Length: 465
Ligand code: F0G
Image (tube, rainbow, N blue to C red; front, side):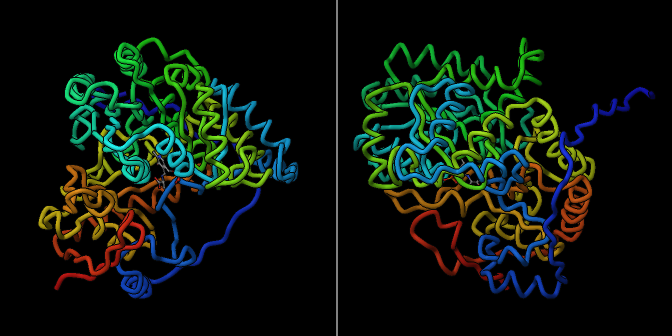
């Protein structure tokens, strides 16, 4: 091999074969122009059947295995004490080590329970970057979110291998300012979504555990993408190369007091989530509260069959071969874009590629919604649906009503698990490259409708003249 030429990485080919396919509708650019206009330039408002490759989210969009589909047939749809609940409880104990489990319909159901139980008015909840629903539930419970992620996370060009890490000095400063009694817990996310799917290291989590234990502050994990985080630890953290994803996942959880989970991501199901905890008091309160919002504590808004599919998915997602192919596919797409000079968040993250819209469309100000604009342009080009993760997603400060201006203005190309092929990745890359080539001609947007909560889901826009 010539010097300077990188050795190709070992193949990441899928550890499964395809048993069934879903046919897709093809549309023309003229049709898509009309569709995106009618959808108010918001990709959330496009009908799924008008989408060719759907990269809106990796949430609930995974392909389940034949074992999971078979699990659906084993659904025990009793109102109370379903067999599938106990299977799920067993899986959570085995793979994550948490003592108590409350199922919820999805992640935000668990966030609601945790926030209501743990947060008092005036409390501060530190976290490694905000997530939209997590922060909103903290605010609705009377708390204030405070970002304690390392500064590198806000810079899409920083090559830091663990951009999800927590800056311990920021945590110490918060404790000094507010007092530990005002900080009920720290919310630690694995492969931080809004930072571009960037992992946290075990070294950092261990140090955080030491610091918070000294002050009696709990750690609750947002374990939505914990297995993907474990893969990065295996690849990048000293001493973990020979450890299995499963054992790393277990170790991450062991450094925390509990977790909220959106099983729609890592755990390979189309719906489901849970709150898990080692604290009996929290469990008791959550068992009570879940009845108000979700359903009885042995189903939490899910059918028995959903819990069975989740229990099986929890096991499948920690297989090393699964994770190698999963992250390998994301990396394949990212490398193609990097080779074409497209500005993306680096290092390449876990669940998708994040285009840096500020660098992609430098002629637009943040008030002209560059990421929202770029997502619309890519849809028009190819029918590939992506998502804004910038100023629209960031929303407004609930106290001052002012817009947040996040440093990161990104378009997320989120890769569903076990759904698309390498050829799909090629088509996506070509579409982004074509859009980049005509970027100078792209005009921005103005917002013409803004809902009160989580505006990115339903906001509408018009093209600036
Ligand atoms: N935490 C993280 C890190 C998430 O990414 C999500 C969902 C949630 C919590 C909430 O879980 O959707 O099951 O209620 N993220 C999706 C996404 C919506 O597209 O990133 P949920």
